[in-house]
Structure formats: structure tokens, C-alpha cells
Image 1 (cartoon, one colour):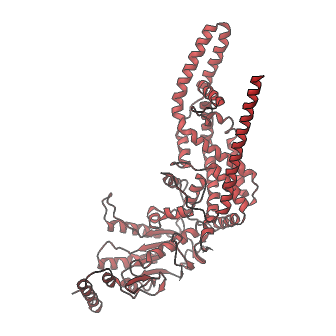
Image 2: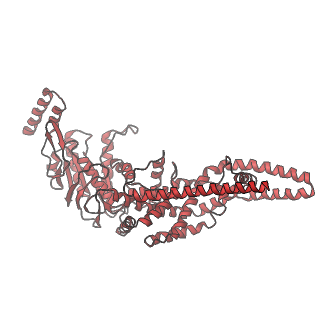
Image 3: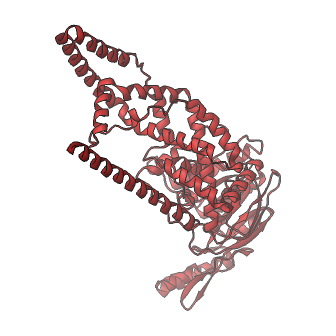
Amino acid sequence: MEYICLMAVLLVIMVIFFARMSAEEKKRARLFEEKLRKEYGHRPPKTYPGGRLEAVKRHYNRDLEDAFSLDEITLGDLDFESLFKRIDRTHSAAGEEGLYRMLRVPCFDPGELARRKELILYFREHEDERVRLQLYFASVGRTDRYSVYDYLDRCLALEKKSNAPHYLLILLMLISLGIMFLNPTAGVLMLIMCIVYNFTVYFRQMRVIEPYISTFGYFLRILDMAEELERCRIDKIDFLIKRIGENRKRFAGFARFSSFLTKTNAMSSDPLEIVMDYLRMGLHLNIIKFYLMLEQIQKNSDAIAAIMADMGYLEALITAGEFAESMPHFAWADLTQAPEKISLVAKKLYHPLLDEPVSNDVELAGSMLLTGSNASGKSTFLKTVAIAQLMAQSFGFVCAEEYGSCYYRLFTSMAIRDDLGGGRSYYIVEIESLKRILDAAARGTGDPKGCAVMCFVDEVLRGTNTVERISAGAQILESLVQKGVFSFAATHDIELTDLLSASYANYHFEESVEDGDVRFNYRLQSGKAQSRNAIRLLSLMGYSEEITGQALKRAEHFIETGDWI
């Protein structure tokens, strides 16, 4: 009777314990859901584990045979990583990688951009559906320093081994049990030998498969979410749900008895789990299940990749909508497919990474040449337009009140640096950077990777002397226009404004000196820059009258005579 009472007490304690665990889990889920609703459009930046961003980058180039994507120079010039972090509020690895690819591979299909717009609007306006999906994505979670596709590639590279030896070992153990009835001593001896051998093989095999167990666990979570998506009944994403469902069917039986593989914990204090660990070691249940699952993954790798791509696509659009919600204002871009037409109309266009951005209006029917002093806003404006065009071809919206343009392949040549490791000077790196734009333009609008080129050049050929810089720079910029490139160029060389006046519209930024301080309004002005405050700035910074006075006289002499002496 005492034992029965003790067992009853233990049972009650276990019921209370698991009930409390369940209640805590539900409470955390409820708080997380409330947080998603409350912080939509205002969530703090994410943190990225070491190496995680590198893993995200490695994913983007899968299956991009004919797709145009931003090259490394353009990524650096636009501070692409900061832009990605500003937008990214995804909860899963698939979402992170889908967002990165969506940003880095601009879209040239009006129908696809229209669908993205439709989904972004839908999830901004339907909170319950959005939150439900975000909870699903959070349950899948993120990976560590490896991409989901890194894990998939590792599985594909792993040698498939037959389970026949493991089945044979189990059979030998059963035979030894049978022998025990005929000859107990021989049967026990044979059983001990089988167990010892099985344990030895087990630990040798586990060293091979253990790094992959967490990978399989992630794949299981992906398939679980795919199943949940099929139940969620959201008509707007029915085309994705059906596609995900068809791919999930190819993994029938994948999750069956997967606990043999994923729940391996030698340090567990759970008696049942300890027993299961010994069964795994003796019968190789997890090794057998591992190779059965590996076989399915290797046969259906395209299906698991397609599921992850669809999930990433969906979560990327949800997070794009949240990014739009966090902006002061945004506009849906009006993009036209007219390769022969060069145009841009933008109202109150601003840079999404600045805390207090100054917006500008611009209307162009051709290329732009931008002049102004250092720190006046030229480079920031070029980046603003480039990022706007990128976002227009990624999400369909722009940080502006109005935006109209065509479809373009984006290239930049702005933040050039010496290649010390490669032994190349600044000038060599710069002319190579410009040459790649000319080469892209030379391929013409018939290039399968996209439409016409839109390029952004900051201080063309700054790495050489004045005479050759102006002469060659003017010819390169002129050549870009002749090849049909929509070119945005910033320069300090005021001579270029006259040399290129027939092919570039002149705009400038200006500053003023008030009360001994330099002030910039960052407002775009038409025409070329008229102010020359560089020498005056030297005086404001404490340079002697001897230096600034002589410099000013020399500059005025050159302007009047064209001669330095």
C-alpha cells in the first residue's frame, strides 16, 4: 500500500511539473505574439551570431545562371550590409537568406513585382495572418554560422552507406537470445560479444554522423512548418502553399521515428531517455534512421531547397512590409519597360539609413553631373538614388513620396581603394572598375541578364593628374551616355560641367559660411556649383594667413589667365 501511495504522489508531482512547463510555454508564446503585434514597424535591430552574415551571403548565388545580381564593388559602395540589417527583421534562416537574395538580385519582371507588392500590402493589412506566419517562422528559427544551403550541400556530399550491417548485428543479437534457451553459456557469451562490438561500431559511426544531427533537426522543423502552412488557409498565398505541399509530400515518412535520431543526450537524467540511449547504442536505431533520412534528402534535395526558397520568399516580403511601416513615408515605384528611354522622377526622395535624412526632388530625362564641395552631400545623393532603384526592383516601393523610372542593371564606382594585396595602385583599380561598367553597357539591352545600365560614379579618375583626369574622365562619361547608360556622376572638376553640358544635366549642392562655421543644407540645386570655399575652410580651421592668402591669390590668377605662374 505504501508503494502505491508513493507512486501516486510521484505521478501527481509529474503531472503538476509538466502542467507548469506547459503553462510557462504557453505564456512565453503569448508574450511573443503580443510583442510581434505591438512592435510591428518599431522592432529593435537583430543581433547576428559570429559568421552568420557570411553564411547568408554564401546562399545568394545558387541557381543564378541567367540572373543579374549586384557585384561586390556595388555592394561595398552602397553599404549593402547595413541596408540589409536595417530591413531584416526575419525570424528564420530561410527568411534571412531569402531577403538577402531578393535584395541582391533585382527583379526585371513586372508581373513578379506586382505580386510582391500585393503580398506586402496584404500582410501589412492582415495582422492575424501575418503574426501566425511569423510564429511559424520563429518555431523554425535560425542556424548558426552555416547557411541552410551549406547544411544541404554537406548532406549531399556525405557518402551513403547501407544499413544492412546494422540489421545483421541486430539479427545476431536475436540469434544469441535464441541460443540462450539451448545453451545459456554460449548464448550469453555471444550476446556480450555482440553488444561490445555494437557499442564499438556505434561510437565510431556517431563521430561521422553527429555533426549532421542538428541539420536533420532543422530540416524536420522546416517540414513541420510546411505542414502547418497547409493548414493555415490563407488564400492570398495559396499558390505558395500548394507548391510547398507538393514538395513536402516527397518526404513521406521522413519524420517517422525521427526521435531515435534527434533525441540523443547522454547527460540526461530522464530514466526513460537513459534506457533509450542504451537501446540506440546496442541496436543502432539512430544510425539506421540517419541513413534512411539521408537517402531521402539526397534523392529530394531539390524539393527541400524549393521549400526553403518559398519560405524565405514569404518571410522576406513580410519583413519588407515591416520595414516600409518603419519609414517616415514610402511610395510604390512606377517602373516601365522602355530600354530606349532614360528617365527618373522622384519626389521627397531620402536615404533610408540616415537618422535625419534630407529629402530631395529630382526629374531627369538624361544623365546627371553633380558638383559641389566636400561633405556637401554629393556621394550621399548618389547612394540614395541607387538604393531607391534597388528597392524599387526588389520590393516595388521606395523611400520617397513618388518614384518613377525604368528597369536597370545597377553598377557603381565610388569608394575605390588601393589593392595592396594584389599589388595594384588606386588608379588601376579605378579604371578596372569603370571598365566593367563600359563592358556591361556594350552588351546592350539584349543582354539576358537584364535591361539598360544605371551607373553611379564618384570623382571619375581621381587617381591621376588634373589634365589627364579631366580629359579622360570627360571621354569616359561621354562614352557611357553614348552606350545608352543612365549615368550619375559626381565631381570636383568644374571643367567637366562645360565639357559634358550637351549630354549631362548639371546639378549641384552648396554650402554657406556663417558665423565662422560651414553649414550644408543638402538641397539639390540645378546648374553647376558656383561657390569655392575650400581655401576659406582652411582659414576657418586655423591655417595661417600666409598659407590661405597666397593660395587664394594663386587660384584667382589661374581663373583669370589659365596659368599657374
